[in-house]
Length: 272
Length: 272
DNA sequence: CGAATAGTGTCTGTAAGACACTATTCC
DNA sequence: GGAATAGTGTCTTACAGACACTATTCG
Image (cartoon, rainbow over all chains, first blue to last red; front, side, top):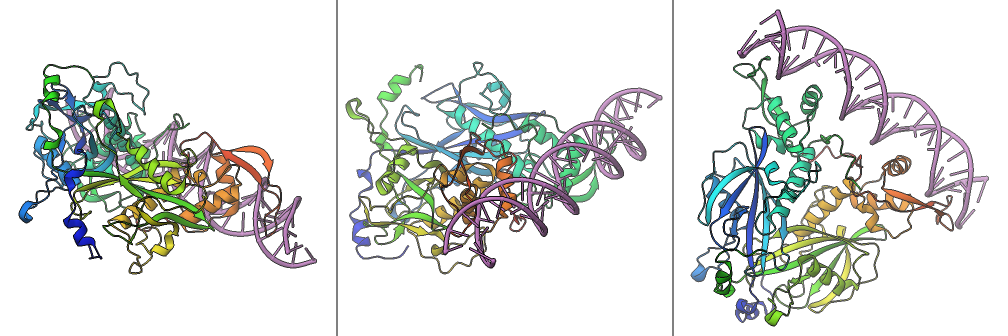
């Protein structure tokens, strides 16, 4: 920030409260895989509006400008991390977090004009969540149980368990983003703990995409993409529960993009 | 919105002004192609802060809650359209608009805490812009002249003509998004006016990606992707300015995604 | 042993890129 | 005519998907 003529006087005479009230919240779509099913972290709201409804964890961004130089302002991503930590107790680092989109339609919150910045998180299997301050409960909920209008598989709505606000829409957008990110990025590895096997990685793809993949071809493809995974030289201690040889173990590679990508099969439909 | 126990009393006693002041703005990255160069729409700020600096067109979202039922609240996308129309006089419909990302780091605006929702617009060649209310000037500026740290080609920074706020970063993100969207979506057609020739479309790709493409292979590829373009049956009135036969004319097809995609050549670098 | 799984070999169809070539139009 | 461009043909290489097969381990 550089000084400019008239800038200081302008700022001194500036009254932020002259602006109409808006609030900014951060909501987080946290996805994980449990028991071979895609789950999302939800909280049951303990305060109005929508008290008792299930919703994405989220809350207001701390925006108080520092009085006497004290700074209580909070980054958007920082607010998302805080919300996530409140429910899961997770330290950042184990969880991949990225901005999803911002939702600001008038009337989406009955209290006032609220602009919500949604974040998308990919987590490995985590312990059961605990309810945060404003929540009666928190739980990992199977995405399939929410009966969303699924853009990938053509499920019928109607069985939709209603989420608060426009959170069903936000979740749907997050799922779309997740499915598409698996194609072009190595983010599937964010759903597993290191070290992992190729089969575990394939299970992630099959769960998120909702369709079986060919084991042999998947194996070859993953190993052929430079930087996707990197061998540890180790293998599992024992074979699978239902038989089979020990599998080699891998950790994340250094690629940030998959090239060439791992395209979803049978995606021709729904393109128009 | 359904009624819930205690909800109404809660809302009646709710005081929105108890919240700390935040402002929400919308900034628009508008890209177009003029004279074979990628241009972005910029305004020269006529008011502090950063008076005299160039910036993305943008402004505060109208969030006043309707007194006596009067509604002056504004959608985020609506605000972006308004900002775009102020400078270009364009009616929506000719311009593709999508949300880019939201920027909310504390201190990014010296006045107060400002959360900015950035939009990305693709426009065909438009007339020279006019300065809006808060701007001294408005102009199409060649992106190359801004000397951004270009993520695609490895230009060196230092020659960066400084944009106000964090707009250089927003612009960079918009360019990245644009380059990548050309791969998977038919949005290149948003840069041309219908009807168009395959060569015009190729010029869009070459300009946005900054590298020459093989004319023959590009031609075949575009026609092979279902729904990308659709023939009008017509041809241009005359050949090119420097010779060549008349070209067939096309309009946009009905595909929303390109399958298979048109991947950028030589993208292996910069992946790690 | 029988079943399931890890990992590899191989073949086929499709598509991208390189190159060549023809036809058309402008200067 | 010479140069530039539109559009097509063809060859090579790469890769995705289908299928087959071996080796290993569990129950």
